[in-house]
Image (cartoon, rainbow, N blue to C red):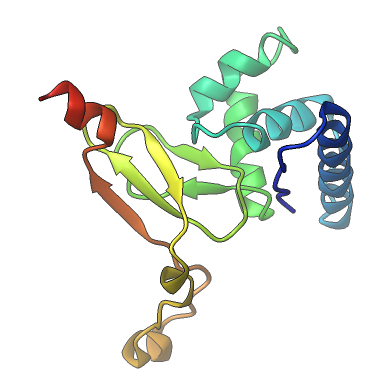
Length: 159
């Protein structure tokens, strides 16, 4: 569902965004969810973000468009997006729950100092093998790679 915006004209980017939003609306209908202004606003904010925002961060941005939306509505909508496969929770952050609207194969690096979560893609991580002992006991739904360390900016700041 996630599209990649190539460096192109603004009109082409708007067209891709509209296609993505149309696909999201259709996905909502397929899974039996109403297409509400709140759901659309939360989805658009998350899908357009590179920050892996928390519910609070999404709430602050969406309130500019929908002033009467509540933090509870944003929280529930983000969880619904996760449940329906339109986004996912970035696990392991240890802080407030963070969300990702990028559904393409990628991994995460979290800076333990500034808390920024950065997307990266390393193809060998796409095909991590699940041990047979785990396969026998569990049904694996998703495999992720999450690295922690110190980002370049924090490393430079500390000298």
